[in-house]
Image (cartoon, rainbow, N blue to C red; front, side, top):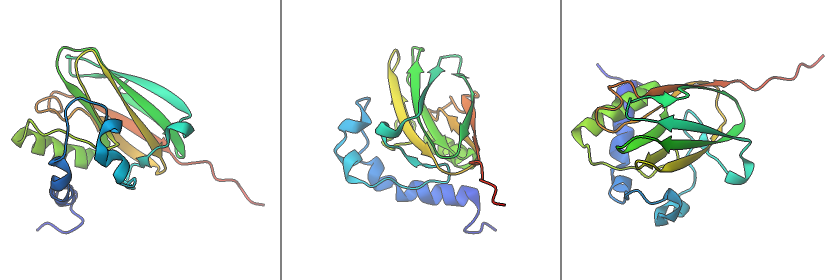
Length: 175
């Protein structure tokens, strides 16, 4: 019996609650140009919150290709860092990068198989056409092990997944 804390059930409920937002999803234009992007306040996620571009401490380029791999596919981040993840699509097909927990990404990948034309407009996602790039500015304010993936139907299943390790901020020792 599924409980309210069951990861799949939580992911599915989150997906259903996002359906009104998905109805306003857009094509390959920048997320910043979307009218709803500025209207909604940032939402705290288990893996962090949308970051302020003025507070970016470093940019990491993540290359995506038709071999269904990310390069690099492992990131080390310190809690409290705000990063620009620059996704560069070197392939000939559409790819995307979505940050989340492994459980939420797996559930969302299943949803994408049922609705392959579904597009996204969330700050932890970038939909990147061939030969283009997309940025995610993210504030990693929660330690833990997270992931990023391409959730276009078939890509996740082919192994287009990466890992993010957010190390806890160093605690100052008091005498």
